[in-house]
Amino acid sequence: MNMNNTINNPVFLTYMGIGKSDVHIDIQYSNNLEQQKEEAIAYLENDPDIERYTVYQNGYVQSQNVEGEWEYVRVQNGDNGVFPLEYLEGKAPTEKNDLALSYLNAVDLGKKVGDAITIIY
Image 1 (cartoon, rainbow, N blue to C red):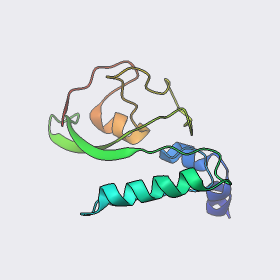
Image 2: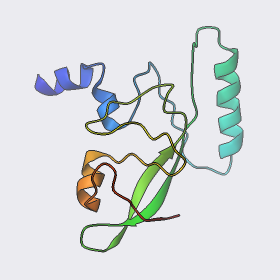
Image 3: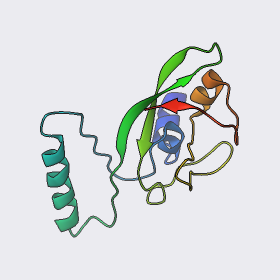
Image 4: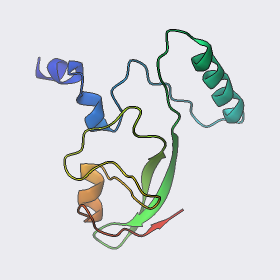
């Protein structure tokens, strides 16, 4: 029952890094990625029932954890203002070099709001 209530809470996904929306389309990497993205955007732009959408790009960077080991961290770039997230601390990234971390990534990397972080693309 608790799991059901949690998942059905309208803001639950914002804590998982996904903005509150009706539909989330995720296109996995493929040889036709650009074509698939363009087709999805064309559909979204031409559907009168769709009020707003945004495109995010996902990838990985490397950063050092608290043990000094380099590990991969999943990052997402896009317009965070379209479907804003809830933050436990701090705010959405606004500057080019800003980065928001999940709670678990922040703990693993030993970072707090305002700390500098070195990443390798």
